[in-house]
Length: 204
Image (cartoon, rainbow, N blue to C red):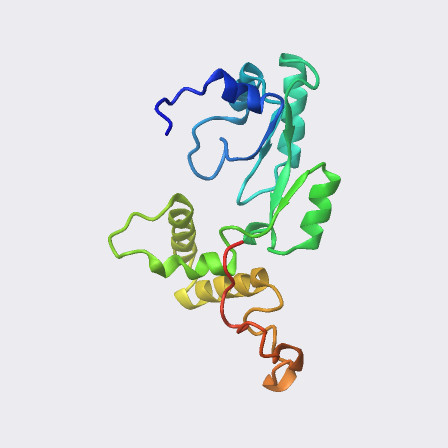
């Protein structure tokens, strides 16, 4: 059992030259502990090669490129590298091949499938007890819904937008994607071994 919050020298040796591939930093739409520049300096201090900028809402390849230029002047070229990424949530159009193409051309190195806007993630929204404090991402999504109401959208219109995004993000095996014209089910989805297309999948 760990009895210290301070990493041992052996632990530091194990990660020397490694990349941290899943980190959220400032600036972001929710508060984070450290800025991307501060984290880069910390990587230099402990011997990490770099990290990937992950955002649930925006592409980060352009930001990574600017940061790498600043780091080359401050730390030295190639000492610490920052990687750009893209997460396929609703803010970039969900499973959007154009967004992927643009991110790749800008130098993104990591692509994440939907996180906060995945169908199974949305299905868990109703699982919180009434008095529970929602996690940051859920509080933000509720704030966005409140902003839409303040802008004049009705609850029905907001629900329609959310459901439309959920179906897009769920893929062809979810929602109404298995229905042909006239409401007839797609015969290819009638095999006994196929999951119910109306049920969200398990988290991967």
